[in-house]
Length: 470
Image (cartoon, rainbow, N blue to C red; front, side):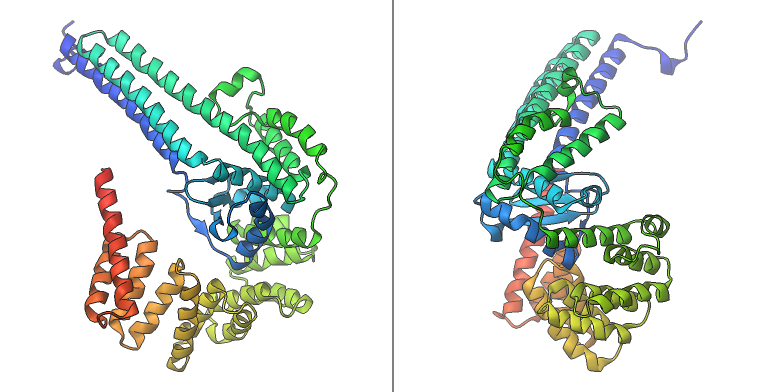
């Protein structure tokens, strides 16, 4: 039988094919290592005033115990349903929404935060980068050896060289990660102890992780640990249990106020993120607790049942008339239901109570603009300028401020506000264009003129970084 020309395999064709396969194998591993180094890159951040205040207060005593500077550490919420938290550079702890949903107590979350602070104090992110480079070096060496063997016609030997190199790189990389995690568990225990916070929640959370591993079929045998980035949850429990139980803080009671706040935030986030029918199944109307009403308010709002959503917020406000977060939710529901005039009262009150909290003030400014009453625009500008002065990383407030400037004909400042919003949204070409246009139209030497230069420089630097990475 004569084979078609396209399927005839010559020695040179085989060599080229093996070389291509080897290159693909190695590049895949390199890509995996680089993706592991920046887990936050493809995830979105959730901003909520109440949640951020809770995370700040939960972390504050742990940050003090770790001897880090409180003002330099941020706790950031990530919109991800998985049970996870991580650090990825700088003094920032990223917490997944799924972790808050899975935890039962604030104490459990504090155990996780203490662990992540251990990564920061130990400089593990920097060392992770060094180890990633080392693993890449092993892989690249094996790639060169493998391609060399392929070009010499030894296809099987080439594949063996690359696979051996991958195994060495991955084994070294994972072992390094496991050692880091084990050391950080001990650091987290020290910070909990130093803050006078019990490790009961930490153990409870590890027990939950172990049960999850078992349900998902992860082997708990010692040999299974080789291919993991983290030690087995069972091993971590065994190591930490004696340490926690011997600590003077073991019997310290949980903070009841912190726990109530945690339950409210957890239900609020669930109502905001989950499908309405799931929320209503988990929090039926027979449950009249504050967390349940909080969750249902968002579920009904998402399901366009405005009257029922407002009935829940009114019930909450009857209990606590001056709770700024209940007022914020009611204002949000009214605003997003096309009733901005009605939203002004609760949002103005919430803004006043929180002394112009940037996120709440940003929503209030939005409501003022949404009335389409020019008489409200001066107040909107004042509120929004105060919001971005306290929190420059608030793209929503910058966008609304740009709307106000454009409405009154101040195009240079409108373009500067747009540039601020775009650079935070990683829309660097648009940010650069708007910043340059703003600079050209603003008074030379003014604060806004200098800021336009800064934003243009930031956008240009990011564009160059992206270009160089290609």
